[in-house]
Image 1: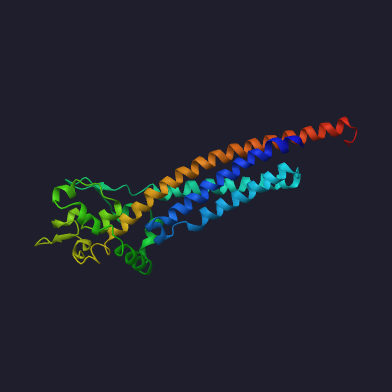
Image 2 (image 1 turned 90 degrees about the horizontal axis):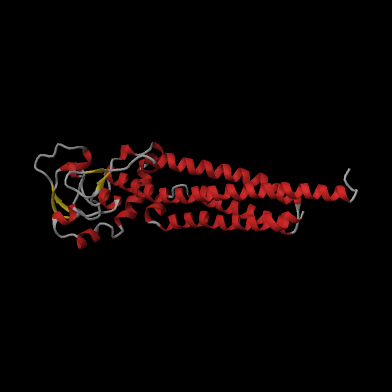
Length: 270
């Protein structure tokens, strides 16, 4: 099966290389503060990446040392992995498609509503136990204090392009009608008839908006932004893996045909 050695082996070396971005994407997400708190889809991506790596290595070895059963195992296993990866890509797209944010009046940054996000995402932050852990981590970061250093004047802050987390957790929603003193210190309106989120605002730097639904929405918006990038990477890898798989199938079929033809010519085909 010369073609197995000359084509299938090198082709699956490409598949080995394609598994690296899958694993790398999950490692990158683990370094992001919000993902390290929520641990969204932590294991499916890393397990898929490792399985693709193992199966591609098996095919590379099978092609190089001409082990037909290993190549057949590769064709079955890689087809299953491609289907699983396609399902993951579609799932990520579907749960991340909602929750785009909206522009508040006279503001350059976006604000977010928790109900705008998919139910699956909202459940990641609904549990009081989970949110207390996330809130404790967020309050220990410098994402809110750094706003005080960057923006001294109200108009400068209103024209700033801050992150979804900063928009949701470091300041009260614009609809609450609070008066700006600095990015994390606001004066409450005399007659506050807005929703419960507005009544929970605290100038205590360890509390701020961390109990708000807007903070949960900001966290989900950050997660959505990062996972949409990962989804694009996974989609590109999926398309590349399909091409590698199709080329491998054709090479294996041609190799089997040549092997049968060679045996026929030698008089050993029965």
